[in-house]
Length: 554
Image (tube, rainbow, N blue to C red):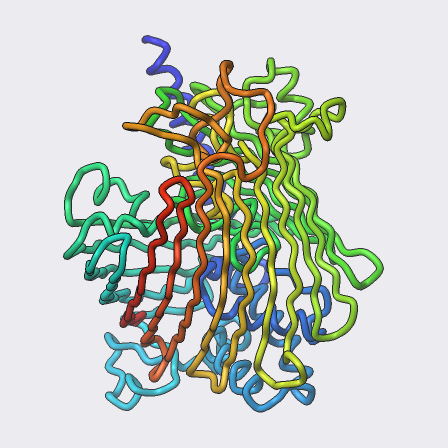
């Protein structure tokens, strides 16, 4: 047996052990609950966050999502107990979400529309939750849904000329819980792209899809799947789904949904106001022949009944197999990284949410990629920091159901990148954190208005600046720390000035709306005006971008 085969064998046995462990655990049963998570794009998180800012859910935090359906249901009931303090639209929303999560709230009152059980045509047009098929008894719950969408995107202007792309996507989702202990989830979709490929690949979700991008086909596919076990005092999850970590609204510094989904083993638990998360993930890097991994652990707790404090560590490393130093959930990763000969990409993060009084939330994040105290203030390239801060206001200026936030983000040169090839904070060359490239900053102002439970609207303005590397024919001639996959090289300058390089300034005005005329059927539209100024070429590009999308979850 050669070494490569033995490594594979160890991996297989370790994964098999985890799966068997979860199955064995699932045999026991203690309490009624749904263990599977609520996907990060579910609109219930917007509602919960708004209730947190208003003080209806004291110290609620969206900093780490997803959370389980069980936990969401508990939060919704906490809000419902205070419904006398809600306005009419908020009451409509809480009643809407109670229907969606009725199985977790009171299974006896659950009454969805189920196509394969002969629901009437009236049910198909009702406010009931809709499924293709469901099954529920004291041992197992099972829900099956169809997922489909049709989207048209159009751009006109200087960047692409007049271009359009059309997307058709279809698939399904199954989820449920076994013996109140083991949650399962599987979502898989296939799609086809028609139209301008270059324009379509400007979307990071599609740019990271191997089938569409690397194989040069018009087809794309996505899948998420996991098992999640409730072990009383902690939860254990194995699989793949999007996780989002960070305080930001425009985007998150730690983990966002920009990069392709990756496989992971995750442990999390909560005791009162203290939450802990550990994750070991497997990533893809097309520039590296080694396996690439992410290790992350995070602690979050509340202080003085007005603030949430979070501390996180992350490591990007390359090995033939996972490193036991980073498999220890409570280890100090940065010190371990030093002892492993300083060959990995380590991050330390501090974040804060403050609720000074109802209706207001101040928040901020400080990301440390690397730091040398002796060289602070010298302009040394290796002092790599990311900052993000903002203010969120609910019922802005006393107007009900209008929220607003202002948020500033700054990434110093070389943040997220690494001097060793393959160690950048990416999955398939797309950043795991904020959408900005290093050596950039951004200011975003957004207002949200929800006039009824079926309609959500947003208007936002954003301006950003980015110092690009000087690149000719794919070769980086001058490195200013402006590319996440291009770390500092031995012959690059030892100093890095913020926004040095080829400056690109981008301004955008965006209007967006999502209308849900029938429960689980969504019509969304977006218009954006973009103005991009490239100083090195002395040109300005103006673009008008629009999209309309019909999606169904049944």
